[in-house]
Length: 365
Ligand SMILES: *Cc1c(COP(=O)(O)O)cnc(C)c1O
Figure 1 (spheres, helix red, strand yellow):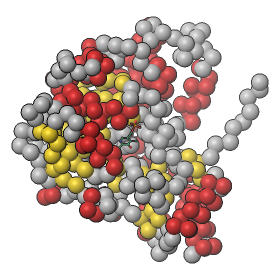
Figure 2: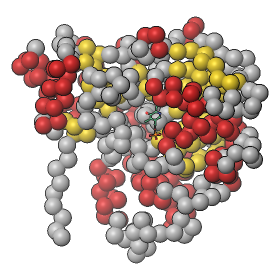
Figure 3: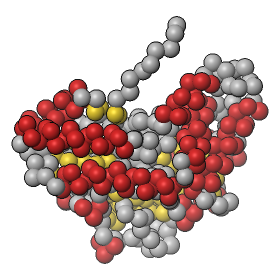
Figure 4: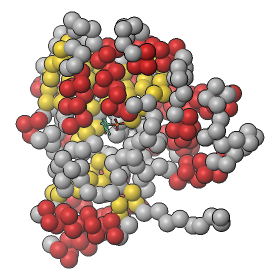
């Protein structure tokens, strides 16, 4: 079978999402046999020296990118961010404790509901009354003194809002669901108790969940919880208590190397700000398109907007798709459009969308 040139569309999907082309090319080259190994990464033992090297390199490149110190473990887990909704309280919330949750969208809501199965949850701030169009301001917080931790969602994938920077939360460890914006800019994970992310949005393929957890907190999980769900077990076994998602970790490692080769997280932030500004400027400069997030809370990763009617929203998504702009239809819970423009999304795709928006408005406006 001869390789055929493959046409790639601009993929605005919220996740699984676009990956860097050099990463896909390298994975494709190595799929039959890793250089010097003679086996595909899909075929190697998770206990082999080859995979030892893949895992170590992935972790150390992540640590370099983040500037993560020795106080934190890096764990490669499965079950998605959704499993972290349960693992966080199982490990960190004692039966007589209280956990604070900042509820800024559907994912934060799910995290809080799951935690309530294990202990007392205090919603210490929420913007639900404003349909999650922004993140809370400092004066709207009511954190619990002595809370086991405070949980927040750094980027609200569905509503297109993001914390401009992660807030100071006092003495309780900060736990962050960063599934849709981790590594979109420099990140201060060192001051967090725990940061987690499903990899399939901004870090790699589906099937891998990244956790950075302070070592002392990782030890808090009681022995009574399932072995596979204890951070301390994963830490003690170097993320290999059982078979880890070998291929997903390999690909995550390639993405880390691509980030380093591209200039790291400062450069990513510059690129992401430029891409997001192109789109928000197009939205703000038109009477036809309306941004749905409060300007002070706008996401760099998921740009949400609406057209004047639902009928036009439907037509826009369909015609955009036919024009090679895929995955723009907003989440079923909110409708409208959502352009997910993660690290790997090329600026040329944003420019193409802006041009498409202008033309669509000219014809339908
Ligand atoms: C997608 C998403 C999730 C759910 O991720 P899974 O890995 O599918 O469980 C959780 N939180 C946020 C912020 C997300 O964007």
